[in-house]
Amino acid sequence: VKVAFSLLNPEVTEKPFHLGKYLLRFWRREDPTPATVINERLIEHLQRVHYARQHFAADNLRGFDDRGMIYVKYGKPDRKTSYWRGVVKGDFRPHEIWNYNSIARQLSFFFVDYQKGRGFELADRIDQAILGVATFFERQLLYYEFAKVDAAFYSRLYGDENPYFSDYLAESYRKEGVPVAVTDVLSRVEEIPVQMRMARFLESDGSTRLEIYLGIRRKDLLVKSLDPFLPSDTLNLKITTILQNPNFVPQRTKTYRAASFNGNDSMNEEMLRLQYRMNTEQRLFYLSGQVEDWLVRYGLEYDEQAQADLKMPVLDSQNVPGKLLKMTAFRTPLLKALQLRPDSLLISDIQLSDKIEVSENPSPHKGDLYIEPFPFEKVNRNKLLFLYFEIYGLTLSSDGLARYQISYEAEDVRTKQNLWSKIVSLFSKRGVGRVEMTSEYTAKSSTTSEWIGLDIKSLPPGNTKLKVTVTDLISGHRGVREVLVELF
Image 1 (cartoon, helix red, strand yellow):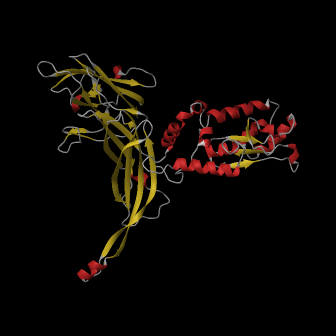
Image 2: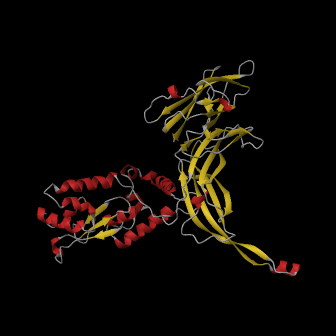
Image 3: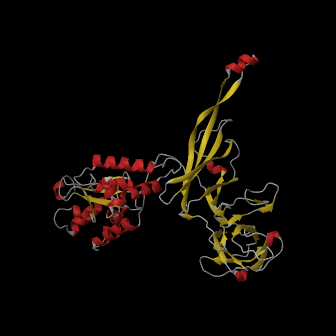
C-alpha cells in the first residue's frame, strides 16, 4: 500500500481516508480480464514493484529510485545505455539512458546519480551526467556517442543551437505524448477484432434491458501459427458479460457459448452476428466483458464396456482440454439506466438493423418483428438502414388513444450542416412509399414501438448523426434520442 500510495496523484494522497476505496476502484478498472477472478494487471504491477525493490533499491518510502518508478510504469526497457568516454569514468556521474521505442518513437528517460550511492534520479537533460559545467564540445561529444544508439540525439550534432531546446521538447513529449503506464499482460494472446453496439430498453417492471450486439468475422478466429486442424477440431466462442457498479464491483455476470464450428470449415468473410440481453436495476453501471476463442480437440479411445456388450471394438470421443487462441475485452463508458419520471416522455436507445420484417420467428421482446442484429460502426449508404425504438409515457386521450409526432433529422458531424435539403426521399415508412420529415401517429397504449427504413444513398460519406424526436400531441412532452453512424 505504501508503494501504491506514493504513486498516486497529489490530490488523492491529500485525503488518505479515501485511499482504500480509490485503490480498489482503480485496480478493478485496470483489470484486463473482468470476467475472471484474477486481476492480471494488478499481479503484473506487484511483480514489477518487487523487481524494482530488488534491483533499484533506495532509502525512501517506496523502496526504489526513479529507475524503479519508470520500470513499474513501463516494464523492462528496450535498451539501456551509459557513456564513460573510454575508460575515464571520473568525468561523469553514474548515469543511464532507458529507451522504449516499442512504446513510442524516441521515448527515452535519463537517470543520473548526483550523490553516488543515494540512487538514480530522473534528469531533465543527459548532460547533467557531466561533472562540473558542461562545455559545448563535451556536450557534442556526449551526443555523438548516444546518437549511435538513440535517434533522438541525431539533431543535436550539427550547429551551435541551444542544446536545452531539444531536451525541453523531449521532456514535454514524455509528459504529454506517451501513456501513463504500459502493460505486457496478455501480450502473447492475439486480439479478436470485435464490433459492438448496444441499446437500452425499459421493461414493464422499471428495470433496464440491455441488448448487446456483436459482430465477428469467422476467419478472424484463426491464428496463423496454429497446427493444421484435425477433422474433429472445433472452435468454441465464449462470451462473458458483467454489469459493474460505478466502483467496478460486479453486480451480475452472464456467460454464453455463442458459437461452435469445425475448424476445417471454409473461413471466408462470413460474419457471426451475436445478440444477447441482460437486465439491471442498477442506476449507474458499466458493461464489461470479454470474448474468448478456444480450440477444443476431441481424441478417440476404446469404450471397453461397450466393446464387451456389443462383442466388437467401439470408439468413444474424449474431450481434450481446450487452448485459448484469441481474446478481447471491452468496457463501455458509465451508463445510466432508463427511468421514466412522472409527467415525462422517454425514448429507448435506437437499435440499428439492415433487416426488419414481420416474422413467425420474431426477435425476443420485439412483438412480431424479426430484427437482424447490426453491431457495425460503418454503414453502407447503398443499402437500407432500419431504425427501431420504443416510446414510453404517452398520454391517452378520452377516446383511449395516444397521439404523437415523430421527426427525423440527419446532420453531418464534421460540417454541422443540416442535410434535410438532400433527404427529401430519404425515409421509407415501414418499407412502403415516401414520407415527409415529420409524421403523426396514434397508439392504443402509453407504450409503443416504431421502426422505419431509411434510403440513405443521397447522404455524403462520413460521420452522420441521426436524430429522432417524439412529441406527445396531447401532453406536449418531448423526447429525443440520437445515434452516430459512419457512412461509406
